[in-house]
Length: 227
Image 1 (cartoon, rainbow, N blue to C red):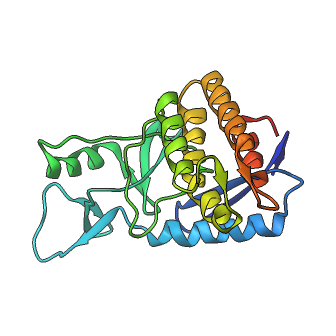
Image 2: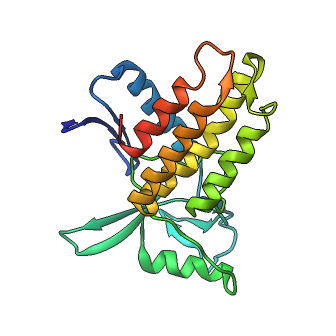
């Protein structure tokens, strides 16, 4: 699917309810995009939110599907689905439609605990094996402080040696990911200002590298929409 400004690649399971998609710019390599989608599919279907339970005894608050019963893992992901013909809302978990009452009943296994959630676009990265959710601050000042701290690891005074340029660039990817979260879930104008401050700081660093900080500047432009 081609839309203004980007292309959408989608994959849907033929005999199930798994769905995956990615967004790429039309000028980018579409073969690479398809490979990214393929890897996303493998990651997504390899991660399980439901845990199959033995059927030797009946579990009242389990999710029952085709004579099998499942419990919820303590970390998971699902897709919100509305069936218009039935006027029913489902959560698609591990490619299976789970009615809201069944999901709610399964949650009673965690009675007394807190549940945190975050609504994310289908095109964003999926949870994979050995991955967990973590709390990340999108306060603009905190993001700048993290950026300065990470950059400072690799500087001698205000000079960056070419020997450390690659490691510095890689370490700053995570700081730019925080900027991206601010763009998506925070104030867009603040995100643009944080991005500009990051770019100014990077261009002020003295170095003897051939390409620092070109790639980082490009990433920041793409995040804040100034590319």
